[in-house]
Image (tube, rainbow, N blue to C red):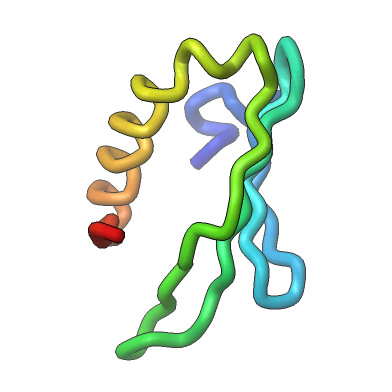
Length: 81
């Protein structure tokens, strides 16, 4: 999916043990970390922390909105905290 949209060179998603790590590397590096566990035949990813590059900070709200759209497209949903 990242490669199809031309983001393979700036974004990555990897599983490290029970951690899901989403990384963006362009004009700095931002990283989102989630704990992953099995849940109802699928999985639940619980937000742990974020390290946001200074140049990425102004785009955070727009990213979060877009992230919810992507989750919806792949059949996932964002739960309220």
